[in-house]
Length: 494
Image: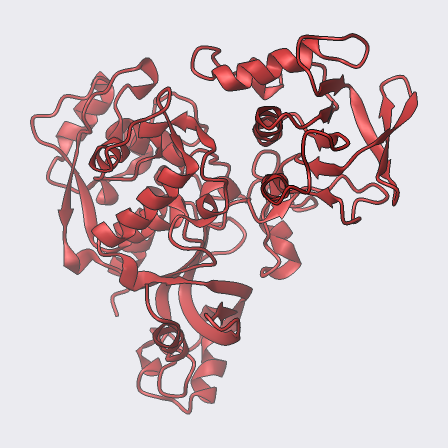
């Protein structure tokens, strides 16, 4: 990555009086979505591999109609019509089945795509992110195992399993560790020569539409800004700061014709909204428990750790605490048999550790002793309050209340995207504009074949923000956005 001063200059040059020329695309977020889009915007172009045979006969027939035409230039709606799978996005299903044909059936068929680097197709862009390339994967405990199969975590034209072989490591029950995934994404950016587009250690604080004419006048009609196609057009102003090695915050401001939101949802943990939740012993990240064990502030003889939630992050916390023999009180609102509970949807053979947590939840309730020491399961309970004396008051479905003395509380009930840099926190862009953006219940409203926001032209949303919550499917959003941006570039050449 670029040194701090060079990185700052690369951003700053767009804000001085001789350099107000807008960047065609700014991508906010450098996780898998941002990386994949950068790859496609860097001139890497997918074509149907001649003499390949896709197991889907209708798709095979469509691909043979124009094998000389890049997938990016074809009608994505036509190609994806009739495809079915584990995503609601037609383009996500299309790209996934082109990269990994029949993977849901356990088949390891080769991709039917071949990739060519065509530099004349490249679109200048910047990728802004707080972490190194890989985004939130660098914030996850490295030993944690992915929910998805390892081969589904790979990006185009560099299979994850091949990278793993070079490291002389293998998958664990077909799955990968978060550390390996984070390293793979960093390697991918370097291997594909994308690093020149990435500005890591950057925090975006504002994205807003501005009049090109007003900036034109402010820039005293500089030659570089005269390249704008229309003085009357609106462009995006992206403001933020760069975190330097010394801890300083260097401000920057860049202008963009298009902005892509690829921030994911890991930034803002969900709070319960109960009294005392802001006390120092109440936390919303698993890493706090790991750090407490490491520095011996919590151990076998401590009061129980309260874990709130019934998702996979809560399960990871329970497994970690169980491994360290730390007592746990586990609180969650659902019934153990609730079909909506994630554990009731996972194959037992593929996810034995999560099946173990589910067994603990079933067998170790407070009402009866079970086989698991140091663990108590409290289904259909919720937290009423946290006290300064480290006592937590819980209530069951019948309204009965009970106080527990605890050493620490971990509220692990999911997370929401941090879109504070957008007007009204991005709510106006959501499917239901009266509710906050939520990746599962209220994603950003997009065109399914371009991923451009319905309410704001020139603004795109990828990944969980658009309802794609698995790495294998976020890549389809990148394909759709890249196709749309290339069409714009060809329609309005500089």
